Image (cartoon, rainbow, N blue to C red):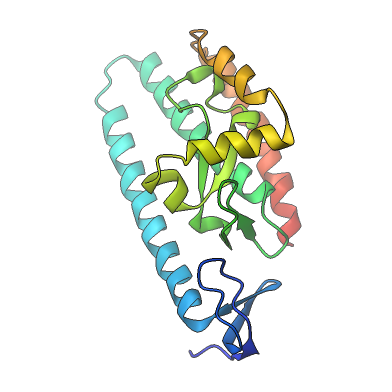
Length: 198
Protein backbone atom coordinates (compact mmCIF):
# COMPACT_ATOMS: atom_id res chain seq x y z
CA UNK A 1 0.00 0.00 0.00
CA UNK A 2 1.43 3.38 -1.02
CA UNK A 3 1.27 5.82 1.89
CA UNK A 4 -0.58 9.07 1.36
CA UNK A 5 1.89 11.90 1.07
CA UNK A 6 1.79 15.66 1.27
CA UNK A 7 4.29 18.43 0.67
CA UNK A 8 6.58 19.41 3.51
CA UNK A 9 10.10 19.30 4.95
CA UNK A 10 11.72 16.03 6.02
CA UNK A 11 12.44 15.85 9.79
CA UNK A 12 15.45 13.59 9.31
CA UNK A 13 18.52 15.52 10.49
CA UNK A 14 20.81 14.12 7.78
CA UNK A 15 18.34 14.40 4.89
CA UNK A 16 16.43 17.59 5.72
CA UNK A 17 14.86 17.72 2.23
CA UNK A 18 12.67 20.78 1.75
CA UNK A 19 9.26 21.01 0.06
CA UNK A 20 9.10 17.34 -0.92
CA UNK A 21 6.59 14.48 -0.66
CA UNK A 22 6.43 13.53 3.03
CA UNK A 23 4.68 10.96 5.23
CA UNK A 24 3.55 11.80 8.75
CA UNK A 25 4.94 9.50 11.48
CA UNK A 26 3.61 10.55 14.85
CA UNK A 27 4.15 14.30 14.91
CA UNK A 28 7.14 14.19 12.55
CA UNK A 29 7.26 14.38 8.75
CA UNK A 30 9.66 12.21 6.75
CA UNK A 31 10.27 12.11 3.01
CA UNK A 32 9.30 8.85 1.31
CA UNK A 33 12.95 7.82 0.90
CA UNK A 34 13.74 8.33 4.62
CA UNK A 35 10.54 6.52 5.64
CA UNK A 36 11.46 3.51 3.48
CA UNK A 37 14.94 3.56 5.03
CA UNK A 38 13.39 3.63 8.54
CA UNK A 39 11.23 0.60 7.75
CA UNK A 40 14.19 -1.29 6.29
CA UNK A 41 16.35 -0.45 9.32
CA UNK A 42 13.57 -1.65 11.63
CA UNK A 43 13.40 -5.01 9.84
CA UNK A 44 17.20 -5.39 9.88
CA UNK A 45 17.36 -4.44 13.56
CA UNK A 46 14.66 -6.94 14.50
CA UNK A 47 16.33 -9.77 12.56
CA UNK A 48 19.71 -8.94 14.15
CA UNK A 49 18.17 -8.98 17.63
CA UNK A 50 16.51 -12.35 16.95
CA UNK A 51 19.81 -13.80 15.70
CA UNK A 52 21.63 -12.44 18.77
CA UNK A 53 18.97 -13.90 21.09
CA UNK A 54 19.27 -17.33 19.44
CA UNK A 55 23.06 -17.20 19.88
CA UNK A 56 22.76 -16.25 23.57
CA UNK A 57 20.16 -18.92 24.35
CA UNK A 58 22.27 -21.52 22.58
CA UNK A 59 25.27 -20.52 24.71
CA UNK A 60 23.18 -20.66 27.90
CA UNK A 61 22.04 -24.17 27.06
CA UNK A 62 25.65 -25.38 27.09
CA UNK A 63 25.93 -24.54 30.83
CA UNK A 64 25.63 -27.74 32.87
CA UNK A 65 25.19 -26.25 36.37
CA UNK A 66 21.44 -25.63 36.84
CA UNK A 67 21.95 -22.62 39.15
CA UNK A 68 24.34 -20.94 36.69
CA UNK A 69 21.97 -21.75 33.83
CA UNK A 70 19.08 -20.10 35.70
CA UNK A 71 21.31 -17.08 36.39
CA UNK A 72 22.22 -16.84 32.69
CA UNK A 73 18.54 -16.87 31.69
CA UNK A 74 17.69 -14.23 34.30
CA UNK A 75 20.43 -11.99 32.90
CA UNK A 76 19.10 -12.44 29.35
CA UNK A 77 15.54 -11.68 30.45
CA UNK A 78 16.70 -8.58 32.34
CA UNK A 79 18.68 -7.35 29.32
CA UNK A 80 15.57 -7.66 27.15
CA UNK A 81 13.10 -6.07 29.60
CA UNK A 82 15.41 -3.19 30.61
CA UNK A 83 16.28 -2.45 26.97
CA UNK A 84 12.59 -2.18 26.05
CA UNK A 85 11.85 -0.09 29.14
CA UNK A 86 14.63 2.43 28.43
CA UNK A 87 13.60 2.86 24.81
CA UNK A 88 9.85 3.10 25.49
CA UNK A 89 10.29 5.39 28.52
CA UNK A 90 12.24 7.84 26.36
CA UNK A 91 9.89 7.65 23.37
CA UNK A 92 6.91 9.94 22.84
CA UNK A 93 3.27 8.77 22.71
CA UNK A 94 3.66 7.96 18.98
CA UNK A 95 6.63 5.69 19.73
CA UNK A 96 9.26 8.04 18.33
CA UNK A 97 12.56 7.99 20.23
CA UNK A 98 15.53 10.35 19.98
CA UNK A 99 19.13 9.15 19.97
CA UNK A 100 20.88 10.34 23.13
CA UNK A 101 24.13 11.00 21.29
CA UNK A 102 23.19 12.38 17.86
CA UNK A 103 19.51 13.37 18.24
CA UNK A 104 18.41 11.25 15.28
CA UNK A 105 14.74 10.28 15.64
CA UNK A 106 12.94 7.06 14.74
CA UNK A 107 10.61 4.34 15.92
CA UNK A 108 11.76 3.05 19.34
CA UNK A 109 11.89 -0.52 18.00
CA UNK A 110 14.70 0.45 15.60
CA UNK A 111 16.84 1.87 18.42
CA UNK A 112 19.25 0.16 20.82
CA UNK A 113 19.61 0.60 24.55
CA UNK A 114 23.05 2.21 24.70
CA UNK A 115 25.38 1.87 27.69
CA UNK A 116 27.98 4.49 28.56
CA UNK A 117 29.84 2.01 30.78
CA UNK A 118 30.00 -1.34 28.98
CA UNK A 119 27.53 -4.11 29.88
CA UNK A 120 30.47 -6.24 30.95
CA UNK A 121 30.64 -4.12 34.14
CA UNK A 122 27.79 -5.92 35.89
CA UNK A 123 27.22 -3.36 38.63
CA UNK A 124 26.02 -0.77 36.10
CA UNK A 125 24.56 -3.11 33.48
CA UNK A 126 20.95 -2.22 34.40
CA UNK A 127 21.57 1.12 36.12
CA UNK A 128 19.29 3.68 34.44
CA UNK A 129 21.89 6.43 34.91
CA UNK A 130 24.07 4.46 32.48
CA UNK A 131 21.38 3.66 29.88
CA UNK A 132 19.83 5.71 27.10
CA UNK A 133 18.27 5.05 23.67
CA UNK A 134 20.77 5.18 20.84
CA UNK A 135 20.46 4.78 17.10
CA UNK A 136 22.16 1.74 15.59
CA UNK A 137 24.83 3.92 13.98
CA UNK A 138 25.97 5.48 17.28
CA UNK A 139 25.69 2.33 19.38
CA UNK A 140 27.08 -0.30 17.02
CA UNK A 141 28.99 1.42 14.22
CA UNK A 142 30.53 4.16 16.41
CA UNK A 143 31.03 1.83 19.41
CA UNK A 144 28.65 3.85 21.57
CA UNK A 145 29.81 7.28 20.35
CA UNK A 146 31.26 7.66 23.85
CA UNK A 147 32.59 11.22 23.58
CA UNK A 148 29.13 12.50 22.62
CA UNK A 149 27.59 10.19 25.26
CA UNK A 150 29.78 11.65 28.02
CA UNK A 151 29.02 15.19 26.89
CA UNK A 152 25.25 14.51 26.88
CA UNK A 153 25.39 12.91 30.34
CA UNK A 154 27.44 15.76 31.82
CA UNK A 155 25.21 18.44 30.32
CA UNK A 156 22.25 16.94 32.20
CA UNK A 157 24.13 15.82 35.31
CA UNK A 158 27.65 17.22 35.89
CA UNK A 159 30.12 14.74 37.42
CA UNK A 160 27.89 11.73 36.66
CA UNK A 161 30.40 10.36 34.13
CA UNK A 162 33.12 10.56 36.75
CA UNK A 163 30.88 8.79 39.29
CA UNK A 164 29.91 6.03 36.85
CA UNK A 165 33.55 5.36 35.97
CA UNK A 166 34.43 5.19 39.66
CA UNK A 167 31.53 2.84 40.46
CA UNK A 168 32.35 0.55 37.53
CA UNK A 169 35.73 -0.28 39.10
CA UNK A 170 34.11 -2.16 41.97
CA UNK A 171 33.66 -5.87 41.13
CA UNK A 172 30.09 -7.06 41.55
CA UNK A 173 28.13 -10.27 41.08
CA UNK A 174 24.36 -10.18 41.34
CA UNK A 175 22.73 -13.04 43.24
CA UNK A 176 19.90 -14.95 41.61
CA UNK A 177 17.52 -13.39 44.15
CA UNK A 178 18.75 -9.89 43.21
CA UNK A 179 18.18 -10.66 39.54
CA UNK A 180 14.67 -12.02 40.17
CA UNK A 181 13.69 -8.94 42.18
CA UNK A 182 15.08 -6.57 39.52
CA UNK A 183 13.25 -8.48 36.80
CA UNK A 184 9.92 -8.15 38.64
CA UNK A 185 10.55 -4.43 39.22
CA UNK A 186 11.53 -3.70 35.60
CA UNK A 187 8.64 -5.73 34.19
CA UNK A 188 6.27 -3.56 36.24
CA UNK A 189 8.02 -0.38 35.02
CA UNK A 190 7.84 -1.61 31.42
CA UNK A 191 4.09 -2.31 31.68
CA UNK A 192 3.53 1.17 33.11
CA UNK A 193 5.64 2.80 30.39
CA UNK A 194 3.63 1.02 27.66
CA UNK A 195 0.46 2.74 28.86
CA UNK A 196 1.49 5.91 27.01
CA UNK A 197 0.81 4.11 23.70
CA UNK A 198 -2.87 3.47 24.53
